[in-house]
Length: 204
Length: 204
DNA sequence: TTGACATTTGACCAATCGGTAAAATCGACG
DNA sequence: CGTCGATTTTACCGATTGGTCAAATGTCAA
Image (tube, rainbow over all chains, first blue to last red; front, top):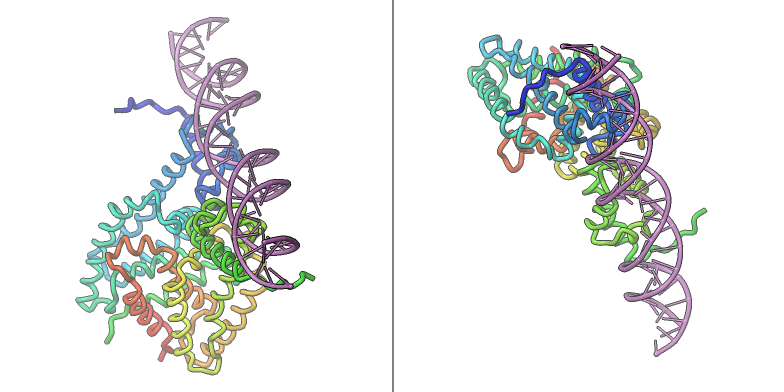
């Protein structure tokens, strides 16, 4: 429908600047807590100039959420149902932890959206996330039934991976206040390794 | 300094109404995302009437955070350093999970505040939470060194308990979207029991 | 250079927000 | 009943916000 206009170098550069600034601001203050002026200033542009590239504050936010969901679900899709169960799940956990370390803003933005009832992505969760999780939960259940890993509810196992890994991005301030370390992730990975090593081992 | 005025029945009733409404609204939309009109309407009072009992929006929010922190740290303080290590830690985990089930709004309010950089309670975390965690981390480390539980970093063990339990309150929408159950907590407790049973067992 | 189009800016607006002031109403007690 | 303080409401204010518009400026190809 929409005529595919070529997209200038300036266009792609500024759109990128805006989205990056928006990620900074939205992930720190939530949707309503952020202002267009903040985003504009963070992007080094004027407010009306922002609205030349995105027609509303909501459009920036929605665009960010959409981009984020892809990044977020990739590690799960990379789970190989033909690989060694424990190895695969440990690798998934480590990929999620790496995501928390490398994309903390995305993690926090997602967390804020969910915390506030996911008003803008509830249907996406229903339509995309749920079927995806269902599929992999079934695989994990098979592994569990076949005795290749411990008998654990596959859904709550996934929740455990999510919560333990995302905690280090979402509660970063708290973690760093309590620990006095620059980088809590090495010790975190060590601990999560231990947790899932022990959890996943099939009962004798 | 302040003369201790008796506090009317009406006063205590309305203050309670306001704080309860404030908890509803703030935990759903964060500080900046909430308006005095929303809170007033949720409390069944007029906006100027709200400000008759609390002199600002911030005062309501701060009061809620202060109340919440007490509730939140109680389970940790109830940890008995003379009890059986694994039993005590399992009991602490279950108390935290119960808190998530029974006080989800408090959990979410705390999560939102931390997510946004804890601008209003960073010093409280530093002054109150950190020493408290330090004390109990030392106890856990002793248990660990004496071989009474597994060798696991005490701080990250505590983080694991926090993240796994609070996840069910903070990400409630996501959990309920993926599961189709009314009450995810029974299965959650079962899974968390398994996780910590296996994690805490001393290595042979 | 010039013309056409893309980009940027400054001035502005209506709505919403937190908060105030003063008048009106309520309620307990002598 | 009447009164005095506690409570509630009505009307309002200044600041901030998301967004608009027209004019100004930049860019690039012919």
